[in-house]
Image (cartoon, rainbow, N blue to C red; front, side, top):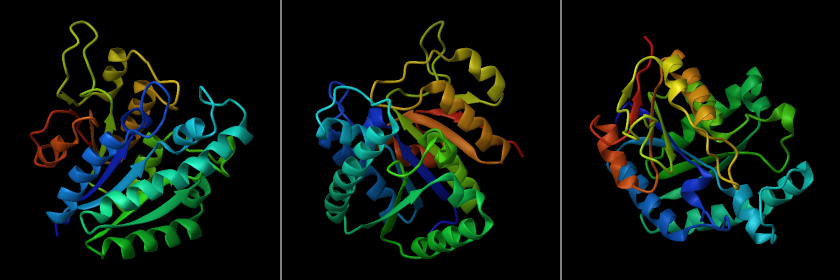
Length: 254
């Protein structure tokens, strides 16, 4: 087992169909196979998965992301169960068990809760074939207890557990230069990177590229490197961990 710890985060746009927000089972199969490959090669991973609210939206017959808190929380309660059932089934094909951890900001900000949470993560990570799957506890979280989106949740978890890197999987290859639409492979000045952003979040998602960069800034300033990569091509994960995959690599500050 390597000493590196990687947080992999998959956004709603990766996990669900654009048209109606239903779970894209083909995309999940592809992603699960790629993450399983990493685990079976000895990499330590935590997986932050969006998609619960989007999945619940479609299950409850809604056509877009709800604005009122009660409906959003109801969607999360329905969708999270559907999502974890799917993950459990798919990962079992690779002899990997999944564990579910649902968080609010209080779990990170409270010293006692954070210590207990870290102990849980450390114990789970001792088991080579258990993958912790993390999401915000959207069925109970209110605005004051919210991380904002799962990009920031991923970074806060990375800081807690001392991860080396965070990989944010999205629907594009990384940060693109708006002038020529070419991938920017490496970024050392995160503040300058905000000038490249054109936000285009989907109707079933919470954040866009600008919110990702806010999370990236938080991570790199804490000494954690970040990659933004295409979750529709998860087979690139192995190469990214080896430093040669297709992504935008945000260099951690020393």
